[in-house]
Length: 235
Ligand SMILES: O=C[C@H](O)[C@H](O)[C@H](O)COP(=O)(O)O
Image 1 (cartoon, helix red, strand yellow):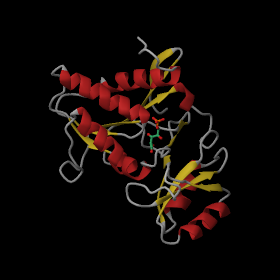
Image 2 (cartoon, protein in one colour):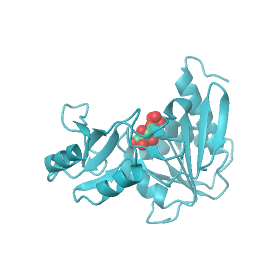
Image 3 (cartoon, rainbow, N blue to C red):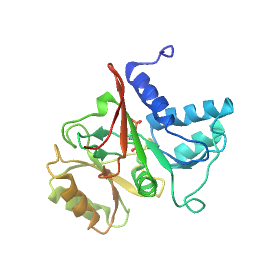
Image 4 (spheres, rainbow, N blue to C red):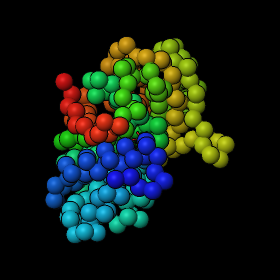
């Protein structure tokens, strides 16, 4: 059923999120992703709690924004210090290729999202069909989080790898700061032939704190579009 005034994309995100929440079992520690799709997850979890269901589930937020949303919605939170292993993480993505490799970080939460995903037994990625792509980099730049110290050197390094760099700006007219106080360089590589190789190069560079390529982390994908809601697993 559609919510009044809700556009198609928002409806697909909500439908995918509602399906994904069905994977949550009582007593689980659940990683709560960031962004508009993950917000639907939090809202659905809060609605189930209000019905007296899944009341013993606790969430690990992947950003300050998600933490605030969960608190405002009454979803109980924990930390990776208290629960270093997460049972299930539900998160969105910006671009998904056929092998279920991802680009994430459009909202700047890539580092905490990756930390939580790597600490999770199972990662369910939740998207509308518009996120599906034949090859990563076709539709979205790769966000790269860099320390402010030496960031221009990282920009030159990234240009050397073939990227067109756009530093991300905040609404206040200053360079955008992540939850960790770092900058983000959005790196348009175009369609990326070998994402694993690019990821290794980025990981080898001091000053690069995180990148938005999520490889080998997706356990399952829930995708919603005009033809319905579908579950996919990496082949
Ligand atoms: O940093 C943000 C995250 O990686 C989001 O999960 C991603 O940008 C998708 O966001 P949305 O669900 O709003 O399209």
